[in-house]
Length: 104
Image 1: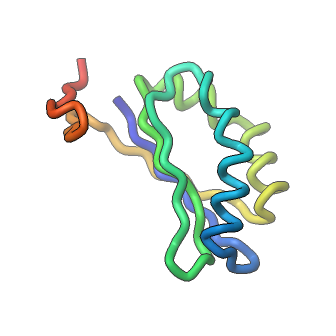
Image 2 (image 1 turned 45 degrees about the vertical axis):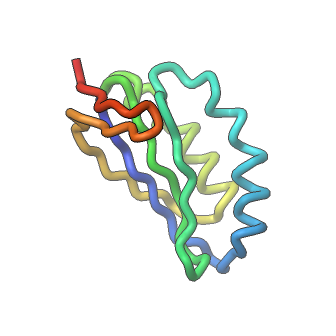
């Protein structure tokens, strides 16, 4: 599994309420992304940084998703460039399911 963390600095701070509204509008776009297991939307306490944490099945799914269209969409929607960090994710602890998930 692969985890990607996306951050972008917003030109103007947003409230949690406004960010929630924006994120909810876009959430359906991620329900059918091939290889995406889970996505968390993020907003810093001061409202100046937003982003997401994505858990992917494999590196190929990541490469397919973060294409030029995606970067353009983020830049147009949030008026800033995203920064992406990638991590191998060999184990996930899922307390809701009460079991660890191991990368195959």
